[in-house]
Image (tube, rainbow, N blue to C red; front, top):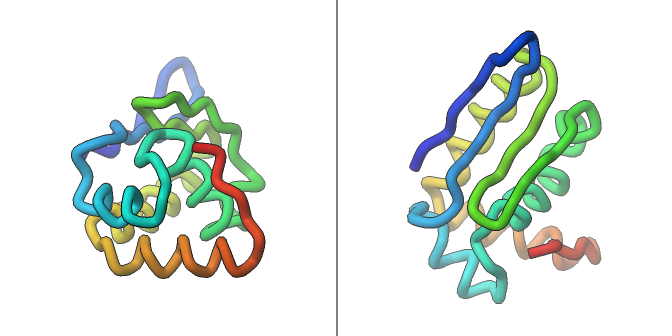
Length: 105
């Protein structure tokens, strides 16, 4: 698991290499692909207050969010607590499905 905060020419980004995460089996068991697009959807659903202030540039193999360093630091803390906990991921997916949220994975 690698979550990285980047600062390049004043632009801040947070990246997560998709795949090989502790929560991957829970994602697959729920019928999703544990790729960058899935994690972007999870962020949009679970933390909409942070997500609305970010731009996303995710790919199949990587989740990427761009925004202020403070928003990205908050997001990093939130995501780190989730990707290592399959039970929390299952709960978020279940709540998203109940709410009619569709993941774009």
